[in-house]
Image 1 (tube, helix red, strand yellow):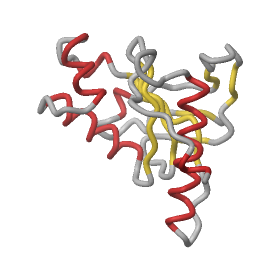
Image 2: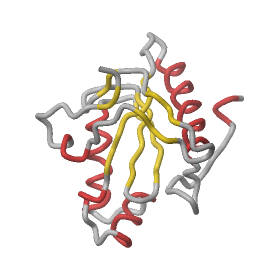
Image 3: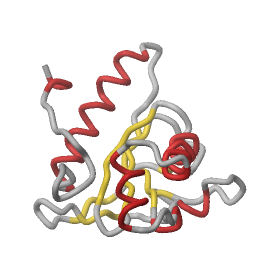
Image 4: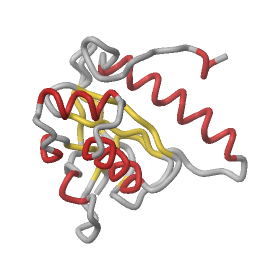
Length: 146
């Protein structure tokens, strides 16, 4: 049962895709998801796909981050996802498909988890080739590894 699933009872679940594998854009390799994750999962790296890809991370519940992206689109905020969805998908939030792809174990030291999430996010940005202009990530940095 490893993969990303819908919880079935929150306002974010219609935007969550059920997946078990991810095809990584850079090398066209399949990645098998190693954890069971859903809308309520924390400490995750996630993808937003709408024809192109955005990679993000959150320490909080995945659904809370999804709903922040939805709010950004609805309120036309100046974020890479909101600008793209409003300009290329006429503000249609149903164009967005979110999937959690990696989950880190939470430790007592939040700073350690955040640094590991930043590292995992950077690896996924590279693997998915999601740095702008190919994707919606506006930067790629090795600073989480330093």
